[in-house]
Length: 255
Image 1 (spheres, rainbow, N blue to C red):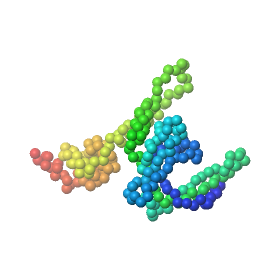
Image 2: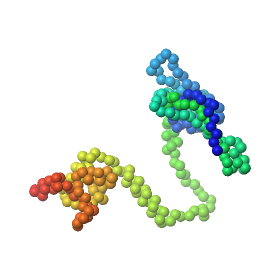
Image 3: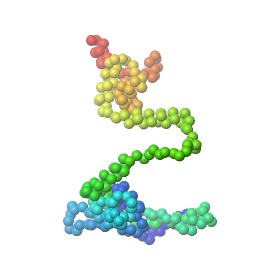
Image 4: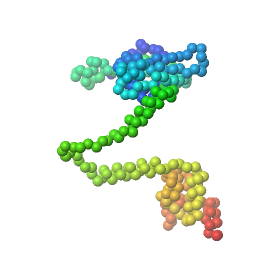
């Protein structure tokens, strides 16, 4: 059951913030001051600045155990036009925690206001930001798995079956192959196809994929323009050049 509270009607900003800022704000206690916005008056073109609260910058009184945030960020805002967006908050009714109300949870949805501006908080690239990024890169480079010495053997481990191992190996192979495929220009792919058909008249799709190093859907789009698909005869399920393009093969045989 939901109840909607529409008392709070105001204009709000919807701002995208960097991941490290969002993480620090989530660790802060409720009601903590996050920072201040400095809007220059009578200075068109001067960007809006967001000044981080000192609680996120000092080492002794920081709300979070992570690295300190940069002092300043640039705030860019754009008006929201031709679109309607609102901010809603959802909270649980404390009475719904009782056992008697376990099957009838009450939710309250509050209408916070209309979004008038969409913005983005961006770092200005000073030394505090560079130091933060350097520390984050070092933390990301740390290995997630470490070697430990066990005092006794682990008996709860169950090896995976051969079918599961084969499935994972095939999945890894497909991922590696998909990473290698880069869609190239149609003219380049056509040139490779013409060069291949100068050597022989018929090819199956697997051989053409290997020759062009292109995905099957993209390759079929090009093949339908310059080739015919053999659905019958001795060359069933193979491709050959259309008659108007077979002069490539004729020129090679005439040499």
